[in-house]
Amino acid sequence: MKHLPQFRSKREEERAALKNTTGYKLWSVMFTILYPFIAIFTFLFSGIIMFFSGISKVLAYLFGGSHARH
Image (tube, rainbow, N blue to C red; front, side, top):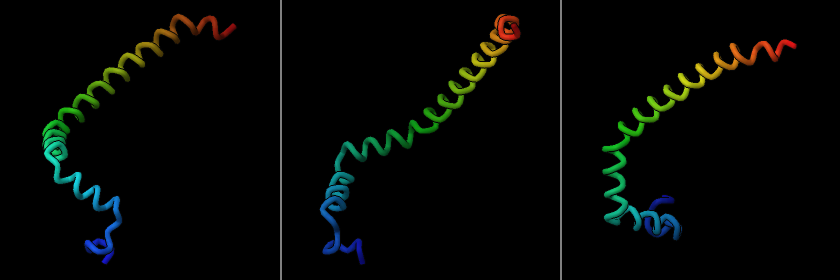
């Protein structure tokens, strides 16, 4: 009952009107197409960051460990 036109709030009407615009439809299509690429890039980039973080931790342990013990 809340979603019947006579019970819609002004914001719901504005949101419905925005969904009919060309820009919204274009964005929806582009986001749907590009989402797998965004997800893969995020996964790979996170892996690269974790790899270099691991190298950094090992180097910090090797070269900074002797100072931390004193």
